[in-house]
Image (cartoon, rainbow, N blue to C red; front, top):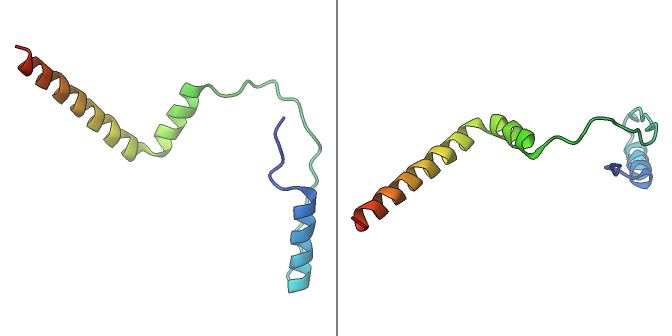
Length: 82
């Protein structure tokens, strides 16, 4: 069950501050309550892939930096232990 982002009290206080400022009041649609979803939570891999697509350039840079570092480490260890 997910927790609502805003409580009823905070929504009411925001509406009161909007009224006191003389702004137009937004339409508030009440939640229908908790609903049961049959969908399982997304897996860690799915979330990681979604994050990688969203931050593509940064993720690729870190991937190639890590790959270069590991190859450099292995070559350095091979050179020292020959």
